[in-house]
Image 1 (cartoon, rainbow, N blue to C red):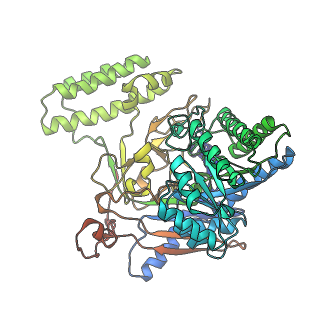
Image 2 (cartoon, rainbow, N blue to C red; image 1 turned 135 degrees about the vertical axis):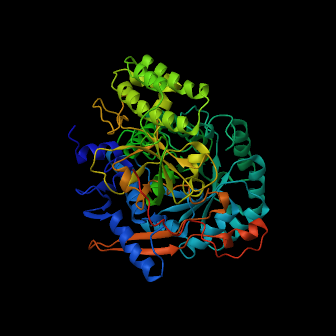
Image 3 (cartoon, rainbow, N blue to C red; image 1 turned 120 degrees about the vertical axis):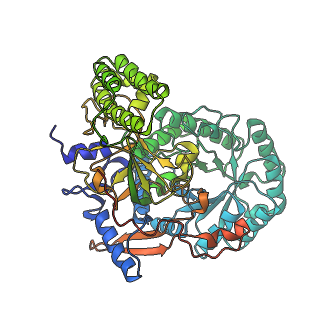
Length: 613
């Protein structure tokens, strides 16, 4: 077929949705597109090479690329979507964002968020996060600070001290004991309270346990009544300013948004009618999704804003003041801002690429010829199963095994190409595990990184992260590869591809499907040229949320070095090394060993010559 760059953009999902800032040049290079400017990763690595050579180092290792301007873009997008929906629907309330530190508490990210909007608030879920917030805000005390999380005497004393210093703090109450503690320690004239409640609704998605009666968060309905009565009894009825809940991350269904917002708005109206007339904030928590795999509909943020505002207006019907809407968006704000750039060390083939000599086994030749006759999907899967069973039967010498593995590899490619040409192959892929092994990639790529440190959500919850080569993107993908890391762990692999939905069938050159009619998940991801990978780099996108804070020092491999990219209005761009990779020095106290920090945890010298046949 005649492959085009548009085909590549579609297959890789570049230039749209939450990968709008990545594109492909006419030469096939992966590029960052910021406004009208284009910066290729090849240029970035070349410039970093010059820096490293000046330091006496010979090549660019893996690194994390930070682009804080993408945070500002996301803030403007979210704030703009809500303000537009407010204006178009004549909504009387206001809107503001509050950033939850748990998503990524790096100073660069927090400072960028604060600089992006004068009203942007911050949320803490723990005492240490609250301490960081107070340090980050310093004299910027007008910003709203929401205190979530379990509160003890020390936490409440910290809040009290901040209030005395003039900070604008909203204290979230999640239990009866917490209400007693806060009311007993903080003067009512200083106190602003939010009641965090359990949303008695059912939502879809991985984090649906954040809602419902069994959620670990918030006041149940009985506790809500008790806290409301307590506020009335102690004369703190005017302290209640906000109602708060959290739907869990990645809320993707419009109906879920409507159901959730409707429930909270009803509670808001009822509490207002009970005399809590200072109540003027509905804090919906997080939930804004990031379009990791491109399968979400476009304009999801606008849809969320429009749905939430219309749900509020439908319930209140001008009988109650329109509340200020707060959204604790985290993932939607930071995910785009970080990319892991992985140096490729080796390329390995699962099967022998060339026979050592002409095939010697007449039986093996006969079996291969017979299995190649399979045509129907079930016949093909039966043939693949029979071929794999033979490896269990033969008592093989090394030569026999080499010959057999070569035949298996060749036959697998033939059977796969036949299989995916059938109209209904997707139904077999979903239901038959043999189909999934038939579509498993034959190439593994060793990256100079660790999944546990750079993309830990993939290990924890199976989070999907898109991965791209930095060159040869204009080509029809040659094959699918599996990215394996440096750790001594079988989970150290980042190899998932969720193809775009299309009735047009696109394939790699060796027969892997690149589009599907139904949502599918494949092992591996496409690359344009397997031979150009060694010494090049791969990019893991959308890793700016949670990965930096929920990371593992598995195999004692610490953080990658950080590089910041900033683009001037003129189009001139700058790179700044934010720090080198963290070695044993950062870990030795934790481990209890006094080990000299002279070891780079990453591979720091590339092999001189690697040949891929």
